[in-house]
Image 1 (spheres, helix red, strand yellow):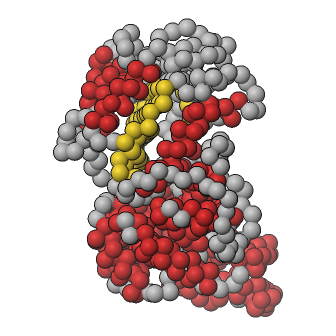
Image 2: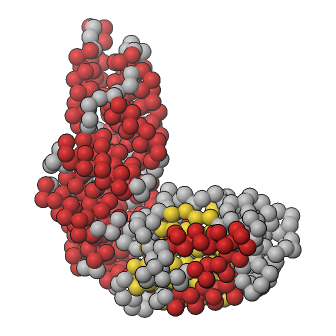
Image 3: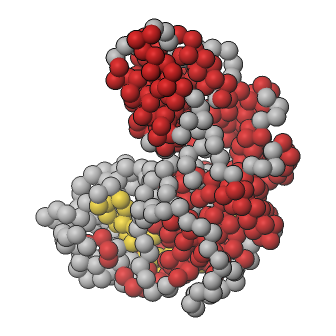
Length: 569
Protein backbone atom coordinates (compact mmCIF):
# COMPACT_ATOMS: atom_id res chain seq x y z
CA UNK A 1 0.00 0.00 0.00
CA UNK A 2 2.79 2.45 0.81
CA UNK A 3 4.13 2.42 -2.78
CA UNK A 4 0.71 3.37 -4.09
CA UNK A 5 0.37 6.19 -1.57
CA UNK A 6 3.77 7.63 -2.46
CA UNK A 7 2.93 7.56 -6.17
CA UNK A 8 -0.26 9.51 -5.60
CA UNK A 9 1.56 11.95 -3.33
CA UNK A 10 4.04 12.72 -6.13
CA UNK A 11 1.17 13.04 -8.57
CA UNK A 12 -0.68 15.65 -6.54
CA UNK A 13 2.45 17.72 -5.87
CA UNK A 14 3.39 17.67 -9.56
CA UNK A 15 -0.05 18.63 -10.87
CA UNK A 16 -0.88 21.51 -8.56
CA UNK A 17 0.21 24.88 -9.95
CA UNK A 18 -0.63 28.56 -9.96
CA UNK A 19 0.40 31.39 -7.62
CA UNK A 20 -3.20 32.09 -6.58
CA UNK A 21 -3.19 28.82 -4.65
CA UNK A 22 0.23 29.09 -3.01
CA UNK A 23 -1.17 28.45 0.47
CA UNK A 24 -2.85 25.24 -0.66
CA UNK A 25 0.24 24.11 -2.51
CA UNK A 26 2.78 25.04 0.15
CA UNK A 27 0.87 24.34 3.36
CA UNK A 28 -2.34 22.39 2.94
CA UNK A 29 -1.06 20.18 0.13
CA UNK A 30 1.77 18.44 2.02
CA UNK A 31 -0.41 18.05 5.11
CA UNK A 32 -3.14 16.43 3.04
CA UNK A 33 -0.97 14.16 0.91
CA UNK A 34 1.77 12.93 3.24
CA UNK A 35 1.19 9.48 4.69
CA UNK A 36 2.80 10.35 8.03
CA UNK A 37 0.53 13.36 8.69
CA UNK A 38 -1.60 12.80 11.82
CA UNK A 39 -5.14 11.79 10.91
CA UNK A 40 -6.95 14.89 12.18
CA UNK A 41 -4.53 17.23 10.41
CA UNK A 42 -4.76 15.21 7.21
CA UNK A 43 -8.57 15.28 7.19
CA UNK A 44 -8.65 19.00 8.01
CA UNK A 45 -6.13 19.94 5.30
CA UNK A 46 -7.88 17.87 2.63
CA UNK A 47 -11.26 19.30 3.63
CA UNK A 48 -9.95 22.86 3.23
CA UNK A 49 -8.51 22.01 -0.19
CA UNK A 50 -11.88 20.58 -1.31
CA UNK A 51 -13.57 23.75 -0.03
CA UNK A 52 -11.41 25.87 -2.36
CA UNK A 53 -13.37 24.39 -5.29
CA UNK A 54 -10.46 24.92 -7.68
CA UNK A 55 -9.53 21.31 -8.45
CA UNK A 56 -11.38 18.93 -10.68
CA UNK A 57 -11.02 15.53 -12.22
CA UNK A 58 -7.86 13.66 -11.41
CA UNK A 59 -6.57 16.29 -8.97
CA UNK A 60 -9.80 16.38 -6.96
CA UNK A 61 -9.93 12.58 -6.95
CA UNK A 62 -6.46 12.57 -5.39
CA UNK A 63 -7.58 14.90 -2.59
CA UNK A 64 -10.64 12.75 -1.84
CA UNK A 65 -8.36 9.71 -1.81
CA UNK A 66 -6.08 11.27 0.78
CA UNK A 67 -8.96 12.40 2.95
CA UNK A 68 -10.22 8.82 2.83
CA UNK A 69 -6.75 7.77 4.04
CA UNK A 70 -7.18 10.14 6.97
CA UNK A 71 -10.60 8.73 7.82
CA UNK A 72 -9.10 5.25 7.58
CA UNK A 73 -6.47 6.17 10.16
CA UNK A 74 -9.30 7.24 12.46
CA UNK A 75 -11.22 4.00 11.91
CA UNK A 76 -14.22 5.84 10.42
CA UNK A 77 -14.89 3.39 7.62
CA UNK A 78 -18.23 4.77 6.43
CA UNK A 79 -16.48 8.08 5.68
CA UNK A 80 -13.62 6.21 4.00
CA UNK A 81 -16.13 4.56 1.68
CA UNK A 82 -17.91 7.86 0.92
CA UNK A 83 -14.70 9.69 -0.03
CA UNK A 84 -13.24 6.73 -1.90
CA UNK A 85 -16.47 6.38 -3.88
CA UNK A 86 -16.24 10.03 -4.90
CA UNK A 87 -12.60 9.54 -5.90
CA UNK A 88 -13.58 6.53 -8.02
CA UNK A 89 -16.32 8.59 -9.71
CA UNK A 90 -13.77 11.26 -10.59
CA UNK A 91 -10.95 8.90 -11.58
CA UNK A 92 -10.80 5.15 -10.84
CA UNK A 93 -7.41 3.81 -9.74
CA UNK A 94 -5.88 0.74 -8.14
CA UNK A 95 -5.08 2.66 -4.97
CA UNK A 96 -8.58 3.97 -4.33
CA UNK A 97 -10.30 0.64 -5.07
CA UNK A 98 -7.83 -1.05 -2.72
CA UNK A 99 -8.53 1.52 0.00
CA UNK A 100 -12.31 1.23 -0.33
CA UNK A 101 -12.10 -2.55 -0.40
CA UNK A 102 -10.07 -2.49 2.80
CA UNK A 103 -12.70 -0.29 4.47
CA UNK A 104 -15.45 -2.71 3.46
CA UNK A 105 -13.30 -5.53 4.84
CA UNK A 106 -12.93 -3.74 8.17
CA UNK A 107 -16.72 -3.33 8.29
CA UNK A 108 -17.13 -7.08 7.76
CA UNK A 109 -18.67 -6.67 4.27
CA UNK A 110 -16.43 -9.21 2.59
CA UNK A 111 -18.31 -9.74 -0.69
CA UNK A 112 -18.13 -6.03 -1.54
CA UNK A 113 -14.49 -5.91 -0.45
CA UNK A 114 -13.61 -8.77 -2.83
CA UNK A 115 -15.39 -6.99 -5.70
CA UNK A 116 -13.32 -3.86 -5.05
CA UNK A 117 -10.07 -5.82 -4.92
CA UNK A 118 -11.05 -7.54 -8.19
CA UNK A 119 -11.58 -4.13 -9.79
CA UNK A 120 -8.24 -2.92 -8.41
CA UNK A 121 -6.41 -5.84 -10.01
CA UNK A 122 -8.10 -5.11 -13.36
CA UNK A 123 -6.86 -1.52 -13.38
CA UNK A 124 -3.14 -2.18 -13.18
CA UNK A 125 -0.33 -4.72 -12.98
CA UNK A 126 -0.58 -7.56 -10.45
CA UNK A 127 -0.02 -6.22 -6.94
CA UNK A 128 1.11 -8.35 -4.03
CA UNK A 129 -0.55 -5.89 -1.67
CA UNK A 130 -3.94 -6.26 -3.34
CA UNK A 131 -3.62 -10.05 -3.53
CA UNK A 132 -2.87 -9.99 0.20
CA UNK A 133 -5.90 -7.82 0.97
CA UNK A 134 -8.19 -9.96 -1.16
CA UNK A 135 -6.83 -13.00 0.66
CA UNK A 136 -7.92 -11.36 3.91
CA UNK A 137 -11.45 -10.94 2.56
CA UNK A 138 -11.60 -14.59 1.42
CA UNK A 139 -10.43 -15.53 4.90
CA UNK A 140 -13.22 -13.37 6.35
CA UNK A 141 -15.67 -15.47 4.31
CA UNK A 142 -14.01 -18.65 5.63
CA UNK A 143 -12.94 -19.62 2.09
CA UNK A 144 -9.45 -20.59 3.21
CA UNK A 145 -8.38 -22.32 -0.01
CA UNK A 146 -8.90 -19.10 -2.01
CA UNK A 147 -7.24 -17.10 0.76
CA UNK A 148 -4.16 -19.32 0.64
CA UNK A 149 -4.00 -18.98 -3.17
CA UNK A 150 -4.00 -15.18 -2.87
CA UNK A 151 -1.37 -15.22 -0.12
CA UNK A 152 0.75 -17.45 -2.38
CA UNK A 153 0.55 -14.76 -5.07
CA UNK A 154 1.43 -12.06 -2.56
CA UNK A 155 4.46 -14.02 -1.31
CA UNK A 156 5.54 -14.65 -4.89
CA UNK A 157 5.49 -10.90 -5.51
CA UNK A 158 7.27 -10.13 -2.23
CA UNK A 159 9.00 -13.10 -0.53
CA UNK A 160 9.71 -10.88 2.48
CA UNK A 161 6.06 -10.11 3.18
CA UNK A 162 5.77 -11.08 6.85
CA UNK A 163 2.03 -10.39 6.94
CA UNK A 164 1.35 -12.67 3.98
CA UNK A 165 3.23 -15.52 5.67
CA UNK A 166 1.33 -14.78 8.86
CA UNK A 167 -2.11 -14.75 7.24
CA UNK A 168 -1.37 -17.83 5.17
CA UNK A 169 -0.48 -19.51 8.44
CA UNK A 170 -3.79 -18.41 9.97
CA UNK A 171 -5.62 -19.94 7.01
CA UNK A 172 -3.72 -23.21 7.35
CA UNK A 173 -4.53 -23.27 11.06
CA UNK A 174 -8.21 -22.81 10.24
CA UNK A 175 -8.04 -25.89 8.01
CA UNK A 176 -6.45 -27.91 10.83
CA UNK A 177 -2.89 -27.87 9.48
CA UNK A 178 -1.25 -26.74 12.72
CA UNK A 179 2.27 -27.73 11.68
CA UNK A 180 2.01 -25.88 8.36
CA UNK A 181 0.52 -22.90 10.17
CA UNK A 182 3.35 -22.89 12.71
CA UNK A 183 5.97 -22.97 9.93
CA UNK A 184 4.42 -19.92 8.22
CA UNK A 185 4.00 -17.99 11.47
CA UNK A 186 7.60 -18.72 12.46
CA UNK A 187 8.77 -17.43 9.08
CA UNK A 188 6.77 -14.23 9.61
CA UNK A 189 8.46 -13.76 12.99
CA UNK A 190 11.90 -14.34 11.45
CA UNK A 191 11.19 -11.76 8.75
CA UNK A 192 10.13 -9.12 11.28
CA UNK A 193 10.60 -9.90 15.00
CA UNK A 194 9.10 -6.52 15.95
CA UNK A 195 5.60 -7.38 14.70
CA UNK A 196 3.11 -8.34 17.43
CA UNK A 197 0.54 -9.91 15.08
CA UNK A 198 2.42 -13.14 14.24
CA UNK A 199 3.05 -13.72 17.94
CA UNK A 200 -0.67 -13.36 18.64
CA UNK A 201 -1.44 -15.97 16.02
CA UNK A 202 1.24 -18.27 17.38
CA UNK A 203 -0.49 -17.87 20.76
CA UNK A 204 -3.61 -19.46 19.24
CA UNK A 205 -1.57 -22.29 17.70
CA UNK A 206 0.08 -23.11 21.03
CA UNK A 207 -3.36 -23.15 22.65
CA UNK A 208 -4.64 -25.53 20.01
CA UNK A 209 -1.64 -27.76 20.67
CA UNK A 210 -2.23 -27.58 24.44
CA UNK A 211 1.03 -25.74 25.21
CA UNK A 212 -0.48 -23.01 27.38
CA UNK A 213 2.78 -21.70 28.86
CA UNK A 214 4.13 -20.92 25.39
CA UNK A 215 0.79 -19.39 24.46
CA UNK A 216 0.91 -17.03 27.43
CA UNK A 217 4.55 -16.12 26.77
CA UNK A 218 3.84 -15.25 23.13
CA UNK A 219 0.72 -13.31 24.09
CA UNK A 220 2.68 -11.28 26.65
CA UNK A 221 5.44 -10.44 24.17
CA UNK A 222 2.84 -9.46 21.54
CA UNK A 223 1.14 -7.08 23.97
CA UNK A 224 4.50 -5.53 24.90
CA UNK A 225 5.37 -4.94 21.25
CA UNK A 226 1.92 -3.57 20.40
CA UNK A 227 2.16 -1.02 23.22
CA UNK A 228 5.79 -0.16 22.62
CA UNK A 229 5.36 0.36 18.89
CA UNK A 230 1.69 0.64 17.87
CA UNK A 231 1.11 -0.44 14.24
CA UNK A 232 1.24 2.51 11.85
CA UNK A 233 -0.05 0.74 8.73
CA UNK A 234 -3.20 2.63 7.77
CA UNK A 235 -4.84 -0.68 6.88
CA UNK A 236 -4.59 -1.88 10.49
CA UNK A 237 -7.72 -0.78 12.43
CA UNK A 238 -6.91 1.31 15.49
CA UNK A 239 -6.33 -0.81 18.63
CA UNK A 240 -7.22 -4.06 16.84
CA UNK A 241 -3.81 -5.63 17.50
CA UNK A 242 -3.86 -4.80 21.20
CA UNK A 243 -7.42 -6.12 21.61
CA UNK A 244 -6.47 -9.33 19.84
CA UNK A 245 -3.38 -9.77 22.01
CA UNK A 246 -5.32 -9.40 25.25
CA UNK A 247 -8.20 -11.71 24.29
CA UNK A 248 -5.87 -14.49 23.15
CA UNK A 249 -3.74 -14.26 26.27
CA UNK A 250 -6.90 -14.21 28.40
CA UNK A 251 -8.18 -17.40 26.77
CA UNK A 252 -4.81 -19.05 27.42
CA UNK A 253 -4.85 -17.97 31.07
CA UNK A 254 -8.40 -19.26 31.46
CA UNK A 255 -7.59 -22.59 29.83
CA UNK A 256 -4.70 -22.95 32.27
CA UNK A 257 -6.95 -22.17 35.24
CA UNK A 258 -5.32 -18.82 36.06
CA UNK A 259 -8.63 -16.99 36.43
CA UNK A 260 -7.27 -13.84 38.13
CA UNK A 261 -5.00 -13.01 35.18
CA UNK A 262 -7.69 -14.06 32.70
CA UNK A 263 -10.17 -11.63 34.27
CA UNK A 264 -7.63 -8.81 34.17
CA UNK A 265 -7.08 -9.40 30.46
CA UNK A 266 -10.80 -9.62 29.70
CA UNK A 267 -11.39 -6.33 31.51
CA UNK A 268 -8.60 -4.70 29.55
CA UNK A 269 -10.01 -6.04 26.28
CA UNK A 270 -13.35 -4.41 27.07
CA UNK A 271 -11.80 -1.06 28.03
CA UNK A 272 -10.06 -0.48 24.70
CA UNK A 273 -11.82 1.49 21.96
CA UNK A 274 -12.83 -0.92 19.16
CA UNK A 275 -13.54 0.23 15.59
CA UNK A 276 -13.62 -2.88 13.41
CA UNK A 277 -15.87 -5.94 13.32
CA UNK A 278 -13.17 -8.34 14.49
CA UNK A 279 -12.35 -6.26 17.57
CA UNK A 280 -16.03 -5.98 18.47
CA UNK A 281 -16.34 -9.75 18.15
CA UNK A 282 -13.44 -10.15 20.56
CA UNK A 283 -15.11 -7.77 23.00
CA UNK A 284 -18.39 -9.66 22.82
CA UNK A 285 -16.51 -12.84 23.74
CA UNK A 286 -14.55 -11.07 26.48
CA UNK A 287 -17.72 -9.75 28.13
CA UNK A 288 -19.34 -13.18 28.28
CA UNK A 289 -16.20 -14.94 29.49
CA UNK A 290 -15.53 -12.27 32.13
CA UNK A 291 -19.03 -12.67 33.49
CA UNK A 292 -18.54 -16.45 33.69
CA UNK A 293 -15.45 -15.97 35.87
CA UNK A 294 -16.81 -13.16 38.01
CA UNK A 295 -20.28 -13.99 39.30
CA UNK A 296 -21.81 -17.40 38.87
CA UNK A 297 -25.31 -16.12 39.74
CA UNK A 298 -25.44 -13.11 37.41
CA UNK A 299 -27.28 -13.34 34.07
CA UNK A 300 -25.16 -13.84 30.98
CA UNK A 301 -24.56 -10.30 29.62
CA UNK A 302 -25.67 -9.05 26.23
CA UNK A 303 -23.70 -6.76 23.92
CA UNK A 304 -20.14 -5.58 24.19
CA UNK A 305 -19.99 -2.41 26.28
CA UNK A 306 -19.34 1.06 24.95
CA UNK A 307 -15.54 1.41 24.92
CA UNK A 308 -13.96 3.94 27.21
CA UNK A 309 -10.31 4.90 27.17
CA UNK A 310 -7.05 3.30 26.25
CA UNK A 311 -5.94 1.40 29.39
CA UNK A 312 -2.59 0.68 30.83
CA UNK A 313 -1.67 -2.93 31.40
CA UNK A 314 -3.09 -3.63 34.88
CA UNK A 315 -0.88 -5.16 37.49
CA UNK A 316 -2.11 -8.65 38.34
CA UNK A 317 -4.53 -8.45 41.24
CA UNK A 318 -5.94 -11.21 43.35
CA UNK A 319 -9.65 -10.95 42.78
CA UNK A 320 -12.41 -12.24 45.00
CA UNK A 321 -13.38 -15.89 44.89
CA UNK A 322 -14.14 -17.01 41.36
CA UNK A 323 -16.10 -20.08 40.38
CA UNK A 324 -13.83 -23.05 39.88
CA UNK A 325 -14.77 -25.00 36.77
CA UNK A 326 -14.38 -28.71 37.03
CA UNK A 327 -11.15 -29.86 35.36
CA UNK A 328 -11.68 -30.59 31.70
CA UNK A 329 -8.97 -32.31 29.72
CA UNK A 330 -7.89 -30.58 26.49
CA UNK A 331 -9.57 -32.17 23.49
CA UNK A 332 -12.68 -33.13 25.43
CA UNK A 333 -16.02 -33.34 23.62
CA UNK A 334 -18.78 -31.60 25.58
CA UNK A 335 -22.50 -31.00 25.10
CA UNK A 336 -25.26 -28.94 26.70
CA UNK A 337 -28.75 -30.41 26.17
CA UNK A 338 -31.93 -28.61 27.30
CA UNK A 339 -35.55 -29.60 26.78
CA UNK A 340 -38.27 -27.18 27.94
CA UNK A 341 -41.92 -28.18 27.67
CA UNK A 342 -43.78 -27.50 30.94
CA UNK A 343 -44.44 -23.80 30.26
CA UNK A 344 -46.50 -21.98 32.87
CA UNK A 345 -47.64 -18.94 30.88
CA UNK A 346 -47.58 -20.01 27.23
CA UNK A 347 -48.60 -23.15 25.43
CA UNK A 348 -46.93 -26.22 26.99
CA UNK A 349 -45.14 -28.71 24.75
CA UNK A 350 -45.20 -32.43 25.63
CA UNK A 351 -42.18 -33.61 23.65
CA UNK A 352 -39.08 -31.39 24.33
CA UNK A 353 -38.13 -33.31 27.53
CA UNK A 354 -38.31 -36.56 25.57
CA UNK A 355 -36.29 -35.02 22.74
CA UNK A 356 -33.59 -33.76 25.10
CA UNK A 357 -33.24 -37.13 26.82
CA UNK A 358 -32.96 -38.92 23.47
CA UNK A 359 -30.30 -36.52 22.14
CA UNK A 360 -28.37 -36.59 25.43
CA UNK A 361 -28.26 -40.40 25.31
CA UNK A 362 -27.12 -40.39 21.68
CA UNK A 363 -24.31 -37.95 22.49
CA UNK A 364 -23.16 -39.90 25.54
CA UNK A 365 -23.10 -43.06 23.45
CA UNK A 366 -20.54 -41.46 21.10
CA UNK A 367 -18.27 -40.16 23.87
CA UNK A 368 -19.59 -36.71 24.80
CA UNK A 369 -19.70 -35.40 28.35
CA UNK A 370 -23.28 -34.10 28.56
CA UNK A 371 -24.85 -31.45 30.81
CA UNK A 372 -28.59 -32.10 30.69
CA UNK A 373 -31.48 -29.87 31.80
CA UNK A 374 -35.22 -30.60 31.64
CA UNK A 375 -38.02 -28.03 32.13
CA UNK A 376 -35.68 -25.32 33.40
CA UNK A 377 -36.85 -22.01 34.83
CA UNK A 378 -34.85 -18.85 34.23
CA UNK A 379 -32.45 -19.27 37.15
CA UNK A 380 -31.75 -22.94 36.40
CA UNK A 381 -31.32 -22.28 32.68
CA UNK A 382 -28.88 -19.45 33.34
CA UNK A 383 -26.88 -21.61 35.72
CA UNK A 384 -26.58 -24.67 33.50
CA UNK A 385 -25.66 -22.47 30.53
CA UNK A 386 -23.02 -20.56 32.50
CA UNK A 387 -21.53 -23.77 33.92
CA UNK A 388 -21.27 -25.26 30.44
CA UNK A 389 -19.67 -22.17 28.90
CA UNK A 390 -17.09 -22.02 31.70
CA UNK A 391 -16.07 -25.64 31.22
CA UNK A 392 -16.12 -25.49 27.41
CA UNK A 393 -13.03 -23.24 27.33
CA UNK A 394 -10.86 -26.38 27.28
CA UNK A 395 -13.09 -28.44 24.98
CA UNK A 396 -12.17 -29.37 21.44
CA UNK A 397 -15.78 -29.87 20.32
CA UNK A 398 -18.81 -28.22 21.96
CA UNK A 399 -22.41 -29.13 21.11
CA UNK A 400 -25.46 -27.17 22.29
CA UNK A 401 -28.94 -28.67 21.75
CA UNK A 402 -32.18 -26.95 22.74
CA UNK A 403 -35.79 -28.10 22.32
CA UNK A 404 -38.69 -25.86 23.32
CA UNK A 405 -40.12 -22.44 22.57
CA UNK A 406 -37.94 -19.88 20.85
CA UNK A 407 -38.66 -16.35 19.66
CA UNK A 408 -37.21 -13.46 17.69
CA UNK A 409 -37.23 -9.99 19.20
CA UNK A 410 -35.72 -7.11 17.23
CA UNK A 411 -33.77 -9.49 15.03
CA UNK A 412 -32.30 -11.60 17.85
CA UNK A 413 -32.96 -15.21 18.86
CA UNK A 414 -34.06 -16.09 22.38
CA UNK A 415 -34.62 -19.42 24.12
CA UNK A 416 -37.50 -19.40 26.61
CA UNK A 417 -37.35 -20.81 30.16
CA UNK A 418 -40.55 -22.47 31.40
CA UNK A 419 -41.46 -19.69 33.88
CA UNK A 420 -41.33 -16.76 31.44
CA UNK A 421 -44.47 -14.68 30.85
CA UNK A 422 -44.22 -13.17 27.40
CA UNK A 423 -45.58 -9.66 27.80
CA UNK A 424 -44.62 -6.53 25.87
CA UNK A 425 -42.21 -4.30 27.72
CA UNK A 426 -38.69 -2.99 27.84
CA UNK A 427 -37.43 -5.77 30.12
CA UNK A 428 -39.18 -8.70 28.47
CA UNK A 429 -36.00 -10.21 27.00
CA UNK A 430 -34.14 -10.09 30.33
CA UNK A 431 -35.95 -13.25 31.39
CA UNK A 432 -34.84 -15.22 28.31
CA UNK A 433 -31.54 -16.68 27.09
CA UNK A 434 -30.11 -14.97 24.02
CA UNK A 435 -28.42 -17.30 21.56
CA UNK A 436 -25.95 -14.58 20.52
CA UNK A 437 -24.39 -14.61 23.98
CA UNK A 438 -23.99 -18.38 23.89
CA UNK A 439 -22.27 -18.06 20.52
CA UNK A 440 -20.04 -15.24 21.80
CA UNK A 441 -19.06 -17.32 24.83
CA UNK A 442 -18.06 -20.21 22.58
CA UNK A 443 -16.43 -18.14 19.81
CA UNK A 444 -12.84 -19.36 19.64
CA UNK A 445 -10.90 -20.45 16.57
CA UNK A 446 -9.36 -23.44 18.35
CA UNK A 447 -12.72 -25.14 19.00
CA UNK A 448 -15.52 -26.58 16.85
CA UNK A 449 -19.03 -25.50 17.93
CA UNK A 450 -22.25 -27.21 16.86
CA UNK A 451 -25.47 -25.47 17.96
CA UNK A 452 -28.80 -27.17 17.28
CA UNK A 453 -32.16 -25.50 17.99
CA UNK A 454 -35.43 -27.45 17.73
CA UNK A 455 -37.61 -24.37 18.16
CA UNK A 456 -39.59 -21.86 16.16
CA UNK A 457 -38.10 -18.45 15.59
CA UNK A 458 -40.80 -15.81 15.64
CA UNK A 459 -42.09 -12.65 17.27
CA UNK A 460 -44.06 -13.20 20.50
CA UNK A 461 -45.77 -9.82 20.39
CA UNK A 462 -49.00 -10.99 18.77
CA UNK A 463 -52.57 -11.53 19.86
CA UNK A 464 -52.28 -15.29 19.57
CA UNK A 465 -49.49 -15.65 22.17
CA UNK A 466 -51.31 -18.50 23.89
CA UNK A 467 -52.70 -20.04 20.71
CA UNK A 468 -53.23 -23.76 20.64
CA UNK A 469 -51.51 -25.94 18.08
CA UNK A 470 -49.05 -28.79 17.64
CA UNK A 471 -45.98 -26.66 16.93
CA UNK A 472 -43.20 -24.92 18.84
CA UNK A 473 -44.10 -21.42 17.78
CA UNK A 474 -45.60 -18.80 20.05
CA UNK A 475 -47.37 -17.58 16.93
CA UNK A 476 -46.88 -17.84 13.21
CA UNK A 477 -45.04 -14.63 12.37
CA UNK A 478 -42.05 -14.78 10.01
CA UNK A 479 -39.01 -16.51 11.49
CA UNK A 480 -35.50 -15.23 11.97
CA UNK A 481 -33.01 -14.63 9.25
CA UNK A 482 -29.66 -16.39 9.36
CA UNK A 483 -27.51 -15.32 12.30
CA UNK A 484 -24.94 -12.78 11.18
CA UNK A 485 -23.86 -11.12 14.40
CA UNK A 486 -22.94 -11.83 17.98
CA UNK A 487 -23.92 -9.02 20.30
CA UNK A 488 -22.39 -5.83 18.97
CA UNK A 489 -20.49 -6.26 15.75
CA UNK A 490 -19.24 -9.82 16.12
CA UNK A 491 -19.55 -12.38 13.36
CA UNK A 492 -20.46 -16.04 13.16
CA UNK A 493 -17.30 -17.53 14.61
CA UNK A 494 -14.98 -19.65 12.51
CA UNK A 495 -15.51 -23.33 13.22
CA UNK A 496 -19.22 -22.96 14.05
CA UNK A 497 -22.32 -24.68 12.67
CA UNK A 498 -25.84 -23.64 13.65
CA UNK A 499 -28.72 -25.96 12.75
CA UNK A 500 -32.41 -25.10 13.10
CA UNK A 501 -35.30 -27.52 13.05
CA UNK A 502 -37.10 -25.23 10.64
CA UNK A 503 -36.43 -22.61 7.99
CA UNK A 504 -37.29 -18.93 8.49
CA UNK A 505 -41.05 -18.42 8.33
CA UNK A 506 -41.88 -22.04 9.09
CA UNK A 507 -43.07 -23.77 12.26
CA UNK A 508 -41.16 -26.48 14.11
CA UNK A 509 -43.66 -29.26 14.75
CA UNK A 510 -43.82 -30.82 18.21
CA UNK A 511 -44.88 -34.16 16.70
CA UNK A 512 -47.71 -36.59 17.36
CA UNK A 513 -45.49 -39.26 18.91
CA UNK A 514 -43.02 -39.08 21.77
CA UNK A 515 -40.55 -36.90 19.84
CA UNK A 516 -40.59 -34.02 17.37
CA UNK A 517 -39.94 -34.96 13.73
CA UNK A 518 -36.58 -33.15 13.83
CA UNK A 519 -35.31 -34.65 17.08
CA UNK A 520 -36.48 -38.12 16.13
CA UNK A 521 -34.47 -37.93 12.91
CA UNK A 522 -31.50 -36.32 14.64
CA UNK A 523 -31.29 -38.98 17.35
CA UNK A 524 -31.33 -41.68 14.65
CA UNK A 525 -28.47 -40.19 12.61
CA UNK A 526 -26.25 -38.30 15.07
CA UNK A 527 -24.51 -41.48 16.24
CA UNK A 528 -23.79 -42.90 12.78
CA UNK A 529 -20.05 -43.77 12.74
CA UNK A 530 -18.00 -42.00 10.10
CA UNK A 531 -20.79 -39.66 9.00
CA UNK A 532 -19.57 -36.07 8.59
CA UNK A 533 -21.79 -33.64 10.51
CA UNK A 534 -23.10 -31.73 7.49
CA UNK A 535 -23.88 -34.98 5.69
CA UNK A 536 -25.63 -36.13 8.86
CA UNK A 537 -27.79 -32.98 8.88
CA UNK A 538 -28.60 -33.50 5.20
CA UNK A 539 -30.01 -36.94 6.07
CA UNK A 540 -31.96 -35.41 8.95
CA UNK A 541 -33.36 -32.73 6.66
CA UNK A 542 -34.49 -35.26 4.07
CA UNK A 543 -36.21 -37.39 6.70
CA UNK A 544 -37.99 -34.41 8.29
CA UNK A 545 -39.23 -33.11 4.94
CA UNK A 546 -40.57 -36.55 4.08
CA UNK A 547 -42.15 -37.15 7.49
CA UNK A 548 -43.89 -33.77 7.60
CA UNK A 549 -44.89 -33.83 3.94
CA UNK A 550 -42.87 -30.69 3.21
CA UNK A 551 -44.36 -28.71 6.11
CA UNK A 552 -41.01 -28.42 7.87
CA UNK A 553 -37.60 -27.91 6.27
CA UNK A 554 -34.57 -27.86 8.61
CA UNK A 555 -32.09 -25.07 8.04
CA UNK A 556 -28.42 -24.54 8.84
CA UNK A 557 -25.60 -21.98 8.69
CA UNK A 558 -21.98 -23.06 8.76
CA UNK A 559 -18.51 -21.60 9.07
CA UNK A 560 -16.91 -24.98 9.74
CA UNK A 561 -13.29 -25.12 8.69
CA UNK A 562 -13.14 -28.74 7.59
CA UNK A 563 -14.84 -32.09 8.02
CA UNK A 564 -16.26 -32.73 11.50
CA UNK A 565 -17.29 -36.16 12.78
CA UNK A 566 -19.38 -36.36 15.94
CA UNK A 567 -19.20 -40.15 15.86
CA UNK A 568 -15.73 -41.48 15.16
CA UNK A 569 -15.04 -43.03 11.78
